[in-house]
Structure formats: C-alpha cells, structure tokens
Length: 184
Image 1 (cartoon, helix red, strand yellow):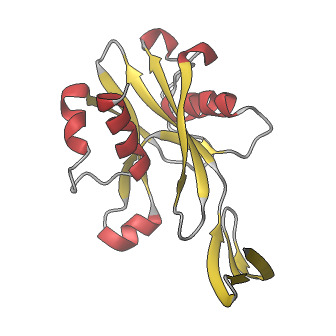
Image 2 (spheres, one colour):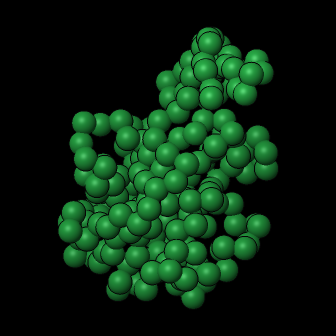
C-alpha cells in the first residue's frame, strides 16, 4: 500500500510544476520529485494524395540543451487544456498546427499511454486521421508564439525513421509509425 504523507511544491511555471512527494511504500519512507504536466492528444496524419505522413517540426529547448540543435519531428499534438472532447481538441490541433480542417468522422482513436513515467506521468491519447488537399484551409504553423513547420514524409521513407537515431523525434511518433506499419 502507498500512502502519500506530504506534497511540497518546489517551483512552478506556465506549463509545469515541480513537486517533491513524500510517501510510505511497503513500510519505507521515500520521496520522489514529480514534474506535473498536462495530458495531451497526438495525431498521426496520413495525406492520401501525397502518400505521406504529415509531421510537425519545432524547436524544443530541452533537446537543444542535449544536442545543440533543438529541432524535433513530432506528431501533431496539443495539451488537453480546453473544455472540449479529446477528439475535438485533436481536430483543433490539426487545424492550428497543420492547416487542415479534418472532419471528426475522419479522426479515430488508436490508444493511450503514459509518457515520462519517471518524472511526470503525463498521459497521451493517440489518434489517427487521413486527410487530403480539399481539407486544407491555411498554412498551419501554430498559434501565438508557436513556430511550427508542417513537414511531409513519404511513406517509403517513414519506416526508416523508427530506428534512425539521427532523426530527432519523440517516442510517440515512433510508436505511431510502428502501429501504422505493423498493426493497422
């Protein structure tokens, strides 16, 4: 049995808060630093006419501190921070980041999983959607100060991303590709 004894807030920012959790686990006193962050939705986008996946490229400061570049290739994604259904948030993110107005009926849930299990325990809900140029209504790029670049990757090249260590990406994108190539 686990009993939380105390939660100490260490610091907080716009999207994250760092806490130290003091707890009893199997009769032993322990502590764990937890970086609380929001859950998110992510969408693997397949463009039927281009026979390509549509990913987003964006700068991530933590990655920059690790590799000196900081640009990552990711699924279209966003935080669950609105009073809307998860699928509606996914649809909104596709429009904001990639510029496509995809009907809700084209968006299907694949699965959900926890990311950063040792630090935040945030959950990500993975969706899949197919789109075409008839759905394009803007260039995308994100909102506010987001600097998101939509990137098309041909299906023939996408399989190589799964094991390519030089292609800076997220586990969610690699998982989504494994699902598409081997389970869909």
